Length: 324
Ligand SMILES: Nc1ncnc2c1ncn2[C@@H]1O[C@H](COP(=O)(O)OP(=O)(O)OP(=O)(O)O)[C@@H](O)[C@H]1O
Ligand SMILES: [Mg+2]
View 1 (cartoon, helix red, strand yellow):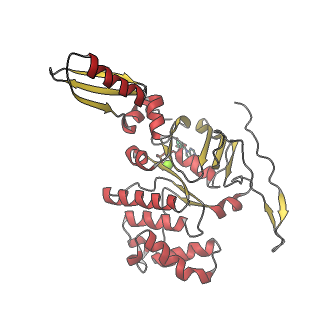
View 2 (cartoon, rainbow, N blue to C red):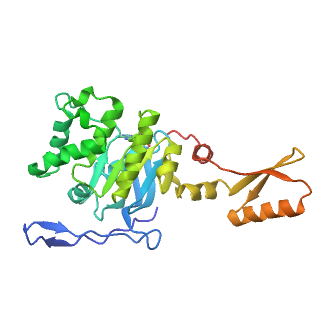
View 3 (tube, helix red, strand yellow):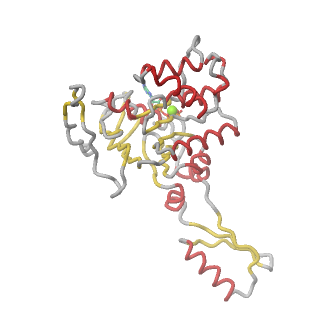
């Protein structure tokens, strides 16, 4: 493996107001020219003894995107997220999150990033409102702001009626939503959400998805993992598929389907009862096929349908069920 590119050393400057040392954000060369990345990982690798949980993971998460990471159990999703969220040191490679290195400058990253882990801790004695105040205090949000912050967050995640309920009495879906609110107490520009929709019922999933889209419209960048492929397909601008620690594919849902699904195909039914499937490369090719069939084929076309490859089928096609 080649050596990972190192970011230029953060420039230490003194903040004129506090006299404290702060580092200026830096960036790697973009993987795609012109795309501003909020998160960049270069050759990130995490090894546990004989097991490589994450191998050579290189990715850019564009500003303002909802970026989905898909992979089966044990693929390395939580490992990657934990490194980006400053909770785990990589064995090799480097990352920049909101312009800062999560390993050498975790505080600068935490200030700008909200992390929702896949499991929520136990908070036996706290009410929902106290739970958010607790985390607001931990993130040094001024106490004077809590009175508007907490009800605002609870309204956003539709938990206002539960403000005085004990956290441990919430349903699982409600805990998930509270956990998302917790990740936002310091108004981060980036949210890293590890399987936020797991355990939610279908209606709650739809509402959760709408909430994430609303957050994106507010300008947040969202990195999310899931096993529910159709769900990511609907809301993500980009998707990366990983298995056994290795990135298998990345790009827009459509481009992944196109790259890995060997283009599109079209099913055509004719008036004589026959049906044929044709491969096409793009929309123009599809239009010329239709023209050719209408003008030149002696049969009459009665149905012309593009066959869509969904991510579920594609996922099974590109992952092999490797368990390490
Ligand atoms: N602390 C650890 N020590 C040893 N192995 C670990 C440790 N943490 C994770 N692993 C291993 O790393 C691999 C990747 O785990 P990870 O939790 O990142 O997967 P995941 O994609 O999040 O899976 P899931 O979908 O089940 O949440 C697994 O094989 C796991 O057993
Ligand atoms: Mg996980």
